[in-house]
Length: 135
Image (cartoon, rainbow, N blue to C red):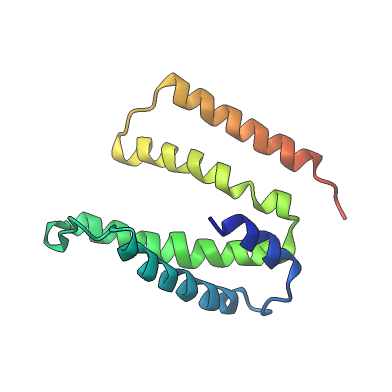
């Protein structure tokens, strides 16, 4: 809910020089918000940690390391180094990459409508990138 306004604000604010520092401030704040809002919304009901498999824990570790630490730090750096319109295209490309990896690694179904949707998304991002005004 606050990703877009936060991204817009971050591109205008004076941020720490080191993107890791920016992530170190923002990620715990977001986590704290999740800890408060999650139980209020009842998201903990039915949660059985004993049912988590080793693969689930490995996937969580991957998401924490690459999806959060590396990905978010790169995003924070890009907010300072590139126009917001280009940085925001990650949200579209990530979905295409996730679907492709799900198909390649996990054997998930990849239908023609999904492929067509991915092609449209990549083409749209290409249009955004090619029409962005250079400084």
